[in-house]
Length: 306
Ligand code: CP
Image (tube, rainbow, N blue to C red):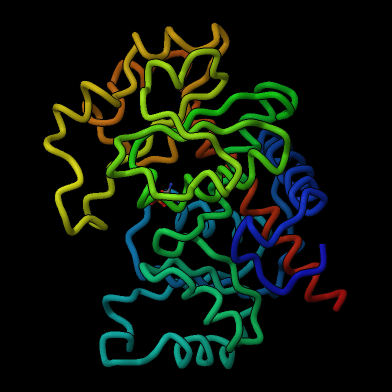
């Protein structure tokens, strides 16, 4: 791979995706053996999270530490962002502090690209608005690949708030580019026009969508991104689109349930399904550290070889 930044799955070809997954698989095996690496010793990794996060932020920080890097974390609430400092000026400051990789989450789609175009550090997109969440897609695909041995021919059903979901966009691009099929399901108010152009099929009826599915992936309703009334009520949503044991029983016998999390029990998924034997939600979290180690390792290699 020869890239300064990783901003979205849409930029990555199949060869690059497979290279990242191969390195991530090795990283996961290394973590399972209880080993760490020092390959990022003397490298500085900074996280800039302008939106809340539990999994992505902590796993990027752990990933950097597992590779021996020094980490700094911009606390937006207590930083000079509150005094009006722009994203570009914040980036230039981190550049001057010797940052090798900046990891950014931002509510505005395209903010990571703006940062990348204005700093010498490598930039990793940790989720931008409703655009992309590439490391989440890669950890989802790694989880599927490790479970099923490959992706070709797998049927993935993503159900819920597709409209506001950067995970749905990145996952659709990533799974289809690697040979799986993706069906997007949700109420019409949460299915954006033209989403099929990303390579997915659309089926608004969940009971039809999940037939024969290998992976069922409910998504959280992103109320923080909604201004209008997209849904009558959570109860009604759950009745039509909640992933329950009954819904899972319509999928393939060996189907698994994934969720990018955070989950809202009783809304898009029941507690029984989230904690049940078909759920791989915690496995996704573990693979998230490995994928993020792979992304950091590959980007720093690119900086060394440029
Ligand atoms: N899946 C995901 O992005 O989770 P966080 O918002 O907790 O990082």
